[in-house]
Length: 403
Image (cartoon, rainbow, N blue to C red):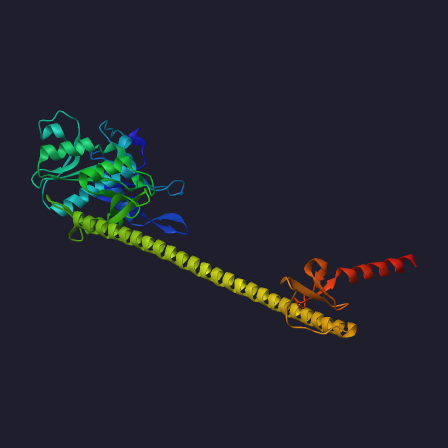
C-alpha cells in the first residue's frame, strides 16, 4: 500500500523538497550531509513534511547510518489516506503534477489553483472528466497524464465547449514521445485539439529548475512517413501561460508552430524541387550522353563506310590496272603473233560484197565470215581465229598425243 512506499521527494511547507538535498555523492556512494539530516528530521517532527499526493499525510526522513539502504521519505505510522493517488499516478506522475502546479503558481501569482476539478462542478456536464489544475478567475486549466492515452480528445473538446475562453494546456510525460515514422494516434488527437503536443521531462533528482518541456508538432513527410517537428525546448520557466495562449520565451507556441511548419514545408518543397531539378539534369545529361554516343557511332560508321569505300575503290583501281595490264600484255602478244605469222595489221573493218562483216584470222591471215570464225579476238574486233586453223591445231594436238 501507499503507506509503505519510499518517496524520493515530499512537500516542505508546501514546496517540493527532494531527497537529493540530504546527501552528496562520494565515489558513487550517497553520504548523508551533517546538519541537513538533523534539520529534515526536525521538519518531520514539526509536521512540516507532508505527502506530495496532496493528502496531507505526515512524512518523515529515513536514513541508514550503516549505509544499508538509500535515504528516502515515508509516511509516519498510522498515516493512511485511501484517497492517495500514488498507486494510479506513479511517483514520476506525482512529481510531474507538483512541477506543473508550481509552474502554474509562478505564472499566475496569487490566483487560487484548484486540483482535480470535476467538470460537473463547473458545468452542466454529467461526464466524469476533470482538470488536473484549474484557475477559475484566470480561466486557465491544465490536463496532465502520465500516459498519453489517458488524455481523451473528447475530454478536451468538452472542456473547451463548457469553459468558453478557458485556455487548457494538455501535457503528457516525455516517456510518451516516440521517435518513430509511425502515425501517433493519441498524440495526433491531442494535437488536433490543442494545435501541438507538450511533453514534460521531470527530473526528480535535480528538481524544478532542471525540469524541461518540449513542444512538438507531428507532420507527414513527402515520402508518406510521419515525423515530429521541434517547436520549443527549454526549462519550465521558459514557458508561460495566459487565458489566450501558451508562450515560449514570450513567443506564442502557435506562432512558433506556424513558422516551423512553414519552414519545414518550404524545405520539403525546396528539396522536392531540387530532386526534380536533379532528375531533369540527370535526364538531360543522359540525353546528351546518348546523343554524343549516337554521334560517335555515326562518325565511326561513316568512317568505316569511308574506309570500306576507299578499300573498294582501291580494289577496283587495282583490278582496273591489272585488267589494263592484262589487256596490254594480250595486245602486245596479239601484235607479236601477227608479226610472227606474217599477218598484216588492219585497223579498218572489212566487209564482203553482201556487206557481211569479215574477220582476218590472226594465224593464217585469211578473211572469213563470222560463221567461219572459231572465236573472235578480244584485242581487236577485225581479227579472229578461224575454224580451219582450229582444225589444224586439233589435228596437231591429236597427233602429238598419239605419238
